Image 1 (tube, rainbow, N blue to C red):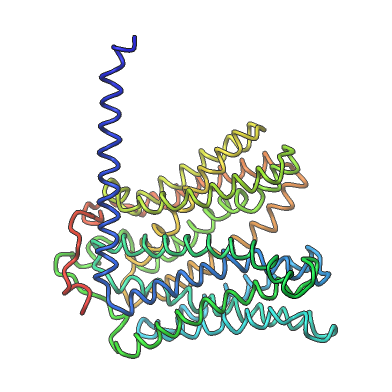
Image 2 (cartoon, rainbow, N blue to C red; image 1 turned 90 degrees about the vertical axis):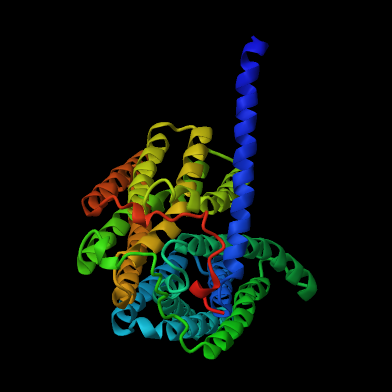
Length: 459
């Protein structure tokens, strides 16, 4: 029996070696692509990663703990988060229609400045007089999220301008990989810095001061990246102008529908998709704790593995786009999410729930750069800020509404209804996008043409 399976095992080993060789080659392709970018493009990648570092790594953890230590409960924390998301959505929508393609550098710089000012304001809330703390933190939080709205609208058109269409998928993947890495580093910092600060100050972790220091890590990390980016942008007056690649056909020939129609279709798609994908992210830990009695340590381990697992999923994005176009990939991701949510709804088992959550996390990790890239490519450059503003508003509005609705559904109807509802919404998102798709092999992004020539990226 062992001899019969020996050739099969050798074949599997050979396939594994070949797969590893391809992945090592992909690392080299990423590095060559990064080195061939202009200085302002490289520095923008660090600014974008810094925003992920402050939001996913620090803000979502440190601000909530900081407010709790000041005596505010979950209700007020919900108001702070909800009002911030509303500020982001309104700012993104307005700026997407008021600011044109040539002003995206200003949107980025001013957006990050507002984020920095808002975070500094939040961090000093406990030093304000008791009577003004609530309006102070709400105003500072709104300023930070307004900055996020400006940055979110300027980010996508700016990023899309620095690579030909054939290699753009790798640039978006690099941005996502750097963001995930710095967000993970920010999360580690939040777990370590408050304890160290409490020891130095002679206080305890029940005091707000250690968390104030943790929050200030965010602007401290953003300021150097912003200064370097602003200097590079001033030295390159043409930064942000789209690169014309003569090897790629005119955009109008492969757009599946008119620009305004695509803005509407993708807005509906992202609303449905985020209503489906938000409950697993927001309520998975609550479901394991309350519904399945899983220990907090195991919950933290599963969520940590999911975050780390999103790195290789994003890393392999160029490989996926060699197999299917971006639009088809968005449909496949939505259908995959619909399938992954079914076990969460039907099988109340910790292992099954963990595997389903890991699958959802991997799909969501791939979804973000694919959706970012696709929505920039289906409209002309003159309408990219409108597309970014409208779809950003739809995304964050859906996430906010899903957070409120999901909590109500989980209490009133139970977690199976919550997750199965996500299955139906994810399937509906896929069906919304299907009529707009048209298979076009020119939209596949090959990675075997790296490194790109210098003429494509400037000096």
